[in-house]
Length: 76
Image 1 (spheres, helix red, strand yellow):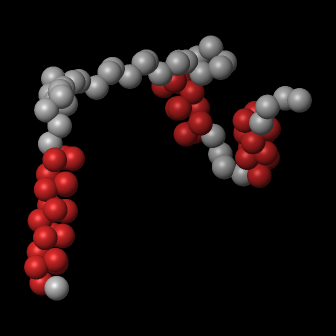
Image 2 (cartoon, rainbow, N blue to C red):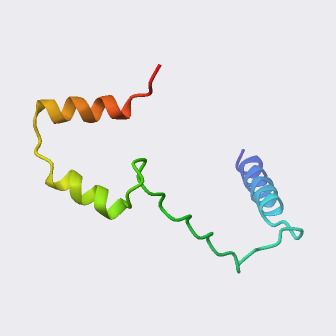
């Protein structure tokens, strides 16, 4: 029983080693991430800094929240 267990472990180890070592695999160590595209301006034609400043200065209440939600929803 112990000999069969050892034989199975050795066979499994040999299979895993042969499966994990692929000589055709090419490592691409010089890969660099692509640059992100620039952030588009807001839909109103203003730059993003102006829009962010306006949104930060806007008072948070129910009326402003509903208008903002309506702007985000697509028009049917």
